[in-house]
Image (cartoon, rainbow, N blue to C red; front, side, top):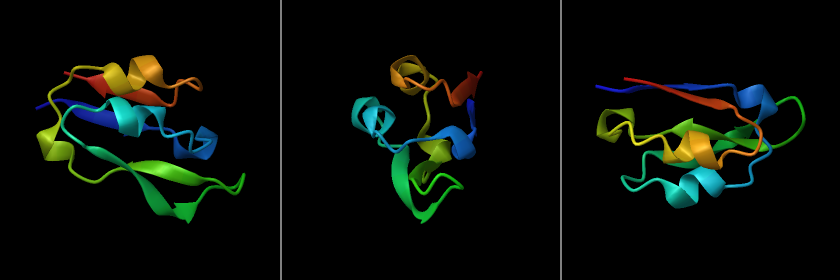
Length: 67
């Protein structure tokens, strides 16, 4: 199963990763980071297929996908 690593303190809640995820693994969370943004969280990590679309789309490179 692929593993997602999210550096949430650098997330600006743009939502690009949420929009491109084919399995709807990611969502914007309720909590905020130190910069005041609602950061992305992996709500359904068990559904991740490791396609890496989220990591490719993230303008701040906060997502790492390990297979």
